[in-house]
Image 1 (spheres, rainbow, N blue to C red):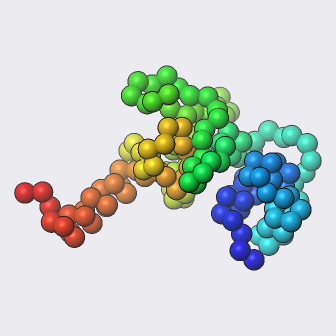
Image 2 (cartoon, rainbow, N blue to C red):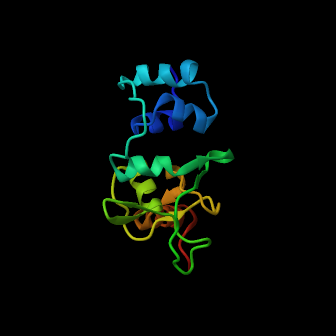
Length: 151
């Protein structure tokens, strides 16, 4: 079975079939439930429960849009330089950057340095649209190797 990546991520984050269907505009019975079974995940319990992790809370604060973007619907900090403020969430008495959580979801490791968005869409926190200093340096080195460094 070919499972959509966005459905798989939301299932792993613990959202119910109905919540995923409503968020992504798909059928819970025909699309989400078979994906849950194929991934071997247990049926979600009914009722609203608090997020178990900052990552689970992250998925509750995003809205998918065209082009694979996930627009942040949660709170934002008032940091200067960030258009509209940086997306943040509070969990367990701590404040987390949604961009850093998105990066960790995509790459399975903590980001090194600043997390940057490669898409340029204001409010986007899609994990696939993030990169850290290590990735930027590797990309720059690859371009230099292919096209020659700056002279």
